Image 1 (cartoon, helix red, strand yellow):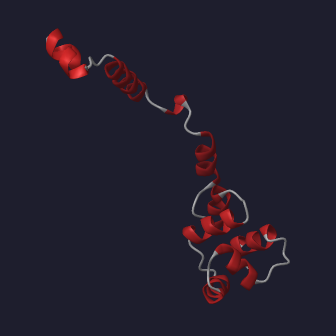
Image 2 (image 1 turned 90 degrees about the horizontal axis):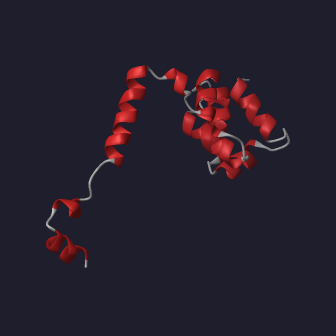
Length: 119
């Protein structure tokens, strides 16, 4: 039994049949049983199973092996500013300054023309 199938047993309290789990997840019994016996669950399956049992899809992807613990931690907390280079931070700062300094198009026109456009 794989870590992922053990996880499914844990989140389903170990007292649900594969048929019941499949129904809850929205998968046919045959498909679920095949994936269970062949240990052939994919990321989309893990996400659907997690959501059906009100669990974190990120947790499911880690158990499945699609994400590492480190990647999951980054996804949960986002990236720290210390992880960006000075150049990347400077570029973002410049982008924000330029965006806030943009002059509205109506200010580039003569007053009477701008007034007509606005009114």
